[in-house]
Image 1 (cartoon, rainbow, N blue to C red):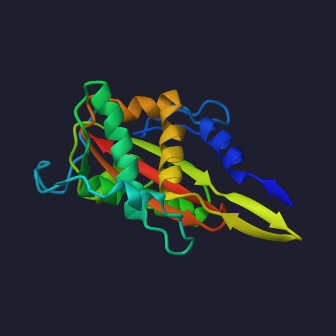
Image 2 (image 1 turned 60 degrees about the vertical axis):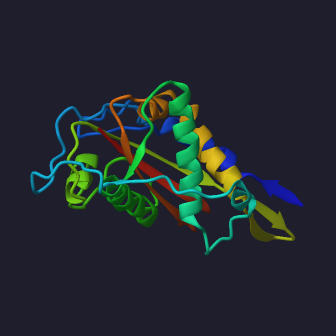
Image 3 (image 1 turned 120 degrees about the vertical axis):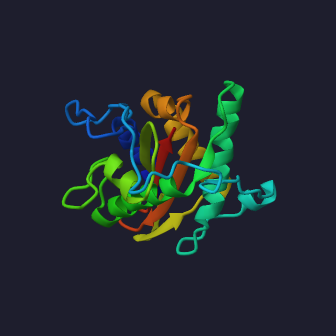
Length: 224
């Protein structure tokens, strides 16, 4: 029985493709490693500013729930997001930073881009041939107004086992998947910089399964 761990290859790729923001992100060779953040406001179509209604409370779930195994085709993205959110805020708390608050506008912006990446099977901050090529465009389309904003992206692959020529997906628990997503960003200096940026106080997360990559794509957009 051969076991080939696609996750290892994906993590290596993730280390080459890093977080970015705004239309001024740089490309260094074949690896995108810029961590520029937008310094100009991302405006709504109206003059409404971020208010309490836009900031969603943290979803409370028991630890026992996270020990269940991810079921392909019935993935509970809310569960992954809740645990990832907890891990990120635990880190920010340890550093004396304000805790993130979930934001619907940023969630919509993240979903626009995450859906795009899964659809075209690419890991990139730019969207070619769409009306929202940049992170700024996506935040604006979602109705967001923030002084500054940033974006992190990645995908985490699942283990594929081959037995007698037949491949099967070995799914992790929700805890293991959330931990790996967190570690992928935490151990990348450029991603970690966005996660621990004191100017960012709101975030929105989108997650989606890719059958082509046998992986979960993740996008987070931050605002302050």
